[in-house]
Image (cartoon, rainbow over all chains, first blue to last red; front, side):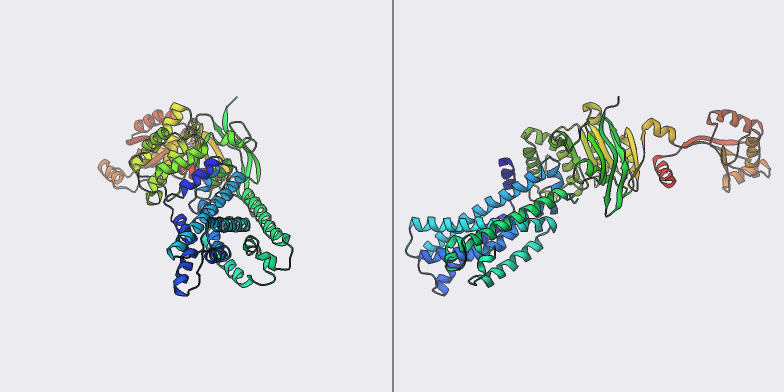
Length: 241
Length: 324
């Protein structure tokens, strides 16, 4: 499995999408930095971290994760490499599991990029109130939110396997971003799996009149359904040439 | 008992109840080059994909190295190299990096081995060029490198010479012959280029409409090719009359064609005769061609040419397909 992850990184060498994802992960911090001067919006590190985490988890990450997921799985079809990979041989289940793990590793890298870039732009803007504890707490919140969000993306694996190009995933990611914008703050937000990660990680779930188990149940149900349908589909379907 | 590396029994594949491969019984002997011949859409690629577990059979059995590959996938498939249609590689990586990915995942990465195999297919000088900038021939050569890199006992190659120039074709042909004859590698190769299959295959399987019509060794194929002796004679009517007297039947034992060419007419004029020249194709009793020649000459017929003709693979392929 470790070799597989190493090879996934080698496959990303000189890959535009990897660099693009890093830039996108830093984008919320850049926008907040601009907002600091343009709208006098952010004056402290605490507010900066809170805003960046919210924009990242609820908006940017949804679109970004959808694109990454589609790329990770779809490229094996688009570049006709799946037939070579499976005849190495790698079992289809292991192949799928390895891709999931690679996606998780990618999510961890993006989380680190977002937090570090937020820190850098906070200092650049000359904000006050920085403490190590604040940074660690903020990073932990974002990491928790992104890992939960990662779990909600298993249905996108199925979509990437079913329609093997990036367009449906991008449309789906953009649509979910809009859905998140609409439902965030509404009473039924805890029932939307892609908003739940931020609500749980930020503690905002306490403001809703639902059990804490409800958003967890939504996230894990989405994950399990996505894993099952993608596994069944991938292991039963002939490999397109 | 014959040692088969590939053996299929009633292997079939249907898409929406439409049979693409229909009850194939294929037998590929160890160390042989088996050429799978068929026109586009005959079912060659689907058959190979089923052997490689890329496409699931609708019914039938597959044995590779005498084992059921579904029960021993790692053991069986790690001993196979393959190319199916156009080889797929990661476009942002170089040839070396692509081979490294495959070798690492196979668990047998050796930098020297990768370099050696790149030299073998003449891609060692392309150190920085990304796969997306490769020509079709280079892609095909990299596919062959990936297929042979781990010294497999079985190669399954679907149209491996597509896109190669004549020199590249010869190089790959020589390489495959070397692998088969010197290292005992069994090769299943498909192509619609008949001359290539004819050049390298020890056994040829003929496929059409999903059916494996026949499997023939070189000797069997040679015996099955239609042969005839062609006589170019100055008096076709007299020659036919002589053959009939020898109890030979038209269309069964011989065919003939009256000449409308200048040569025969000129010859007739020179001889001052009214006879018409032509060609006789002797289809049976070929071993008696000397006697027939003598008979013609003794009867005053000029025989300007006697030649032994053999049906080529293309004609044979067309004939057996039209008979099914």
